[in-house]
Length: 321
View 1 (tube, one colour):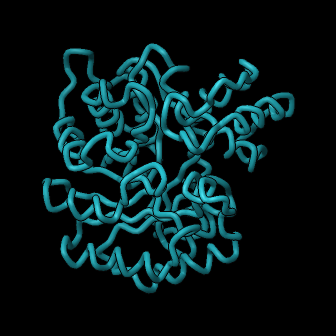
View 2: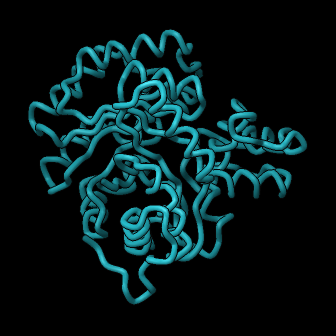
């Protein structure tokens, strides 16, 4: 299952139309970002997408438990599932731009973990229910409490692999999906600009987990500090800040899959070898929508050939399911 995360500003585009574009590119559905000052309400738009398209799966990603009480979130998701049984995705998290833009802090880890238990109790099993997680504590707690994890651990197969292994070590039956920032492009720096600071923030919170060299940690922190969450997902997210080039490149290579179709397919073949249950592709990267056909074909080709680079189809052999 391959979904595209839709993160377009309010009024910029109709999510139902964008879902149609994603389906035409061979993807299975869409996920809808939750940040009230930036994007349309993902629960309302999920209902519209499921009613207006043939998407196999759609839903909020990531529904902010920093703004929404878990019982209220569960009630909304349960209602969506009643109208569209078996087609609802719900990914929850502590919140990023959603809480930052309101001057709030994400919920404390223990409170968040209790919220996950509430959600698991109230949300029916017919919903694909996942918790977004990057660092080891959140991955383990989410797998244990919720039984489903959207691993957001970047683009390095070794680090993603240990994240998937951790989730399944604490709960072997856990559903594990990946959130991956990927784009077919020949300009990686421009493609990554809308989201790179938020990626750097993950490295800052868990530098040992992400194997950040000590000499680069201050530079990575400056990349994170330069990110303007009021413009998250846009080309202006960094503003005019200058950051160390080496740190900028490190964050990009650690968190974003870029290159031509073959390069992208080969990276997803490595991810496919991990045996994950699905993938959510970031939609805020520069160039994703312009080359969505290429991206969808590359991702699906890679996942069809897990662990292999030799069997990836040549340029003229790409096709969709």
